[in-house]
Image (cartoon, rainbow, N blue to C red; front, side, top):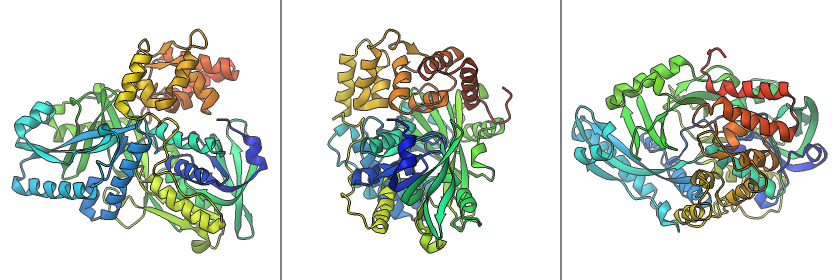
Length: 543
């Protein structure tokens, strides 16, 4: 997988997809699998923003039932099963407990009704070949059993808890990347660190974009028969600049922060409902993720971050509604923030706004042909949104293509069969690799490529930091996965930065390997290390 700028500047593509988050990545994969020629560009790195900075859930959206968004919930539950089937190494079942404190029989009855409807809408949750991926229906457990499962539920008036199931991603940034990888395996051209600056207009027809290579500080044009804008929270900003007027389709940006703390549960996720919204406690890689806030954000999407005030307020909220948590600032190992790009539907607040998506053909809304924008939507439904988008693109192009296969086509790392048997087999085959479970989850059936490389040269099998990564991953990321910066490797191709700062020694090791491979100067290496350090600082904190 190479960054082929020559081909990007030379060819005329059927589709140019701007934005390498999960929406753009899914569109590129779908179109490529159907036989269209595709270019995919991203101004930073693939899945660098909202697509990585989320709750890491593949879920139906139980709370959307409150707004009677039954079609959105049903679509989400259907797509949850698709992700489980096509990426079993990265998506797996997760049990949730919803505790009920006081409230009388009404609170319990309301939740029971909602979960019953959730089960009905997910009637196909057991239609998976792998028994380990099938999800049971919900059930009620009393206070004694609930506390035996999760002592942190202790609190005044605990009646018991509802147990239900959804799914969790092991690494959303890796899952998004596998879409990009699969697109390139089908002949697409993808490039990160390539910013779309201006639309190429001939009259009222878009013919592509002028791009800025952020690494070489060079500009060139990419041409395509149809351009698709999938830039998440940047959509209305780009359109306003590119079309020379205020964007007709406004977004509301909702900021969600997450905190990673020592493990708070024995394996269950917790959904804690309050009068002011809900929050999750999610077990993940031996820790717990606390998520998420949901507040309007009015600044530049490039400047979103987590402040000390954000952390203090969220910890206070969690401690108030889950008293047994007793969390302090020192418990926070890592934090991150993402922006949800919400279609402006007139909701009074971001929490109540719909998570629906909108597909805009600018030939109708702005009298500009050759441009489609995709805004809003959910991680879980991104594949289905891509299918609808490519269907529309095919009609506009009047192209003869293959049928959509993304609902069942396995990802490059998804050819693992039954996941439990696959993991057990890897442990036997690579019994001397301490982090084999972690590596097998990250790469799935492609893990053998990493371990073959690890044996190819002395030092490549060396462990880095405490997360189970090895040097071979760094080399593989550069050679095969278009990792061009230290941040690309630490934050997205590997798990090194997912649990907080990996330590200066680990960063030095990675930067050293990249310097040797890419020919960086010492000044450039230190600049890269300093840049990555910013990922682990709160907004306004001094270096």
